[in-house]
View 1 (cartoon, rainbow, N blue to C red):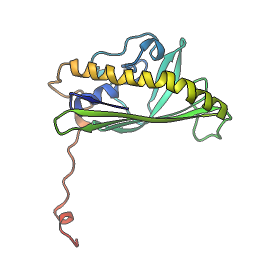
View 2 (tube, rainbow, N blue to C red; view 1 turned 90 degrees about the vertical axis):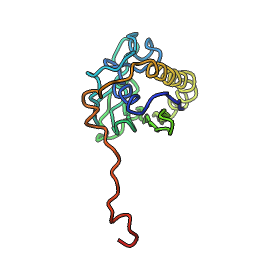
View 3 (cartoon, one colour; view 1 turned 180 degrees about the vertical axis):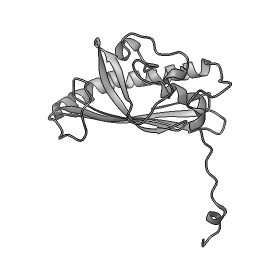
Length: 194
């Protein structure tokens, strides 16, 4: 699933960096995944520090639900999330033996810079459930009927919010240090046989 946003990856990244309950929200139907609290309509500097191992949560059914841990952070390029929880939404230790029931999944957000200065935001993921009968039910009913529309709404809300947001004059704290230009190859690497 993907959408093109009229903004650079540097303008899109801060919105991804603040994902999660008690942060910027999930930009979908807030009653379902953010405890009814509206998702952010602006970038918040206090939510820009995102690091590998951070736990992101949902707020649903009146309680916090462990959703994903941050697995990959490539500012302005890619955010990778990893989930491994009980079916009740509590984080499991991947070092322990697998229980008989669990949910495991990945959720990735790729920012592709387009030649015209826009960004293609591509979201992809995978989830598996055990026992298998739960997976058959969830994949057939819940994922198609609920998760796909919520993810499509997330893309639409992100696009709207980012395109309406004022352009940042200065980079946000923590973001400027992470933005680096690609390294040029050494002159030796350009000469065949060296």
